[in-house]
Image (cartoon, rainbow, N blue to C red; front, side):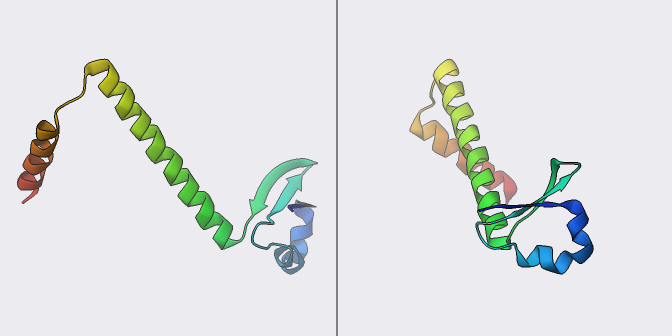
Amino acid sequence: MPTITPISDLRNYGSVLEKVTAGSPVYLTRNGHGAYSIRDMSDEEHFQKAEAMIQLLCELNAGIRSAEEEGWISEEDFRNHFRNRRSEKQ
């Protein structure tokens, strides 16, 4: 469960940080509106992994749309493309 705290409570930041646990971030408000969040590092790692997964899925969907619009390539053309790229790097 998140904790909502005014940003002025950061004067005593130790007590604010004690409230932060995995799965329970602390949200800091300024003038009654959300301004910042403090999360446990394990939550941050999960967030970054989820963000990377979403980006990968978006790229895969773009590739599928492109293939459906422009046509699919053969497996042999696919393999040759990456063989050529590998040999160019060497």
